[in-house]
Image (cartoon, rainbow, N blue to C red):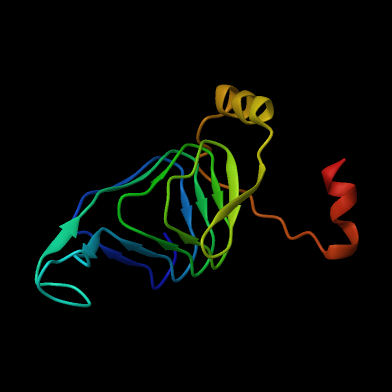
Length: 137
């Protein structure tokens, strides 16, 4: 979990194993009651809704996860996204509101999880822009 994250956990927040939450991620489990019969813009009631984040999820910097959302296993939330509805397994979402723009290779994902579900430590390597294509071969 990166620096400067904020979790408003009035409702439950369930974060799975091996997740990566970058810096400045906000998780909100509370909504105002904007459908009041007596007051606007909202009344004095709050609605708590749980947030679920599955295993192996990557949430990019400055993303916001709103109340009631589920981000299923292996999904990727791009930096700056606002998740206001649930994200399916292995989906890649981006934007405000977050929309699916692609998918992880599910067969490759399953194979990696089967052979090495959670690596204890990561051996970080810096790949310069000019050389990244050679690395991916």
